Length: 311
Ligand code: HMG
Ligand code: MG
Image 1 (tube, rainbow, N blue to C red):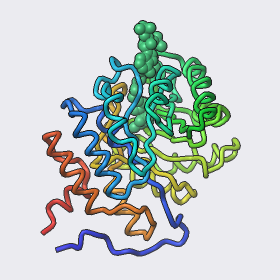
Image 2 (cartoon, protein in one colour; image 1 turned 135 degrees about the vertical axis):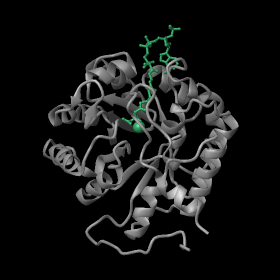
Image 3 (cartoon, helix red, strand yellow; image 1 turned 180 degrees about the vertical axis):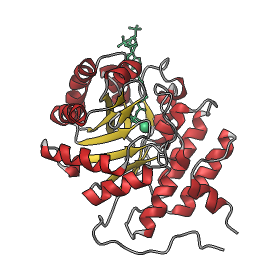
Image 4 (tube, helix red, strand yellow; image 1 turned 45 degrees about the vertical axis):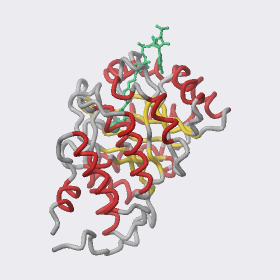
């Protein structure tokens, strides 16, 4: 019999608090083959907020043909926008920004690629054409008083191009930072990173003038490295970590992308380290269990499974 919580043994060299940027309702559901009704998505977002997640990425205002799973953004957002949490939404261009602004979104995220192949697959643009698409979008969003996050995909490896040179990642991260993105989320879209690589990229970014305080990490767990990579980032001073409830996710335009780091696995580790997150692990696990029932398959999260089988 376990208590449902790890024993806490703090590591004073790590941050005291971590902000979890929950992406399950967007990064998770954008990749689901099962159609999820809008009301179920809204309930998912509400339950995530009630479990103590203070940033819940809600949906994307992208082209509905590109991501049909999130084509109901106009219906969904009004159902959740009054929740007392941060509700960022993805927008790829000014058209997406207009749609988000019309519904009262207060935070957006643009999403660049470190590689040409993924920029083409995900945005139908070269890397620099995509940056040119974002620049006026970010400027207008800032003028409208919105917070802007810049995602960068394929920071550690790319399914078409293989290893991605660190200088290439630094160049595009700097471009997003200079454009005005206040937070930069480094995506290991296909989950190939290892901790030394994480450390090397963070150091290179610092040397290029990007401070750790603006960096978030976004790991996928394809090779079981997401938690080790997160710990490497925490040791470097990163305090914002993206994760997806129940480990939902992938990317519709990167076939080898499997689930994101599961929020429950992350919270188990952070609770054990005595790092504050504000998240109630039992409520979160119940939410992911409920979502797994809606999707008709078990959660891939080890923590969700372990806690669900607890006597
Ligand atoms: P395109 O086909 O090049 O579009 O797609 P376009 O700019 O040529 O416009 C064509 C038509 O689409 C026009 O309509 C536009 O108005 C319309 P028409 O004049 O022909 O009637 N359009 C739109 N409609 C609704 N909303 C919009 C919009 N924009 C244009 N926002 C585009 C370019 C960027 C639109 C497309 O490629 C797209 O929507 N891509 C999104 C792909 C996506 O969402 N991928 C998943 C998110 S990224 C990710 O998951 C990775 C991440 O998690 C981090 C990680 O793990 O690495 C963030
Ligand atoms: Mg992702």
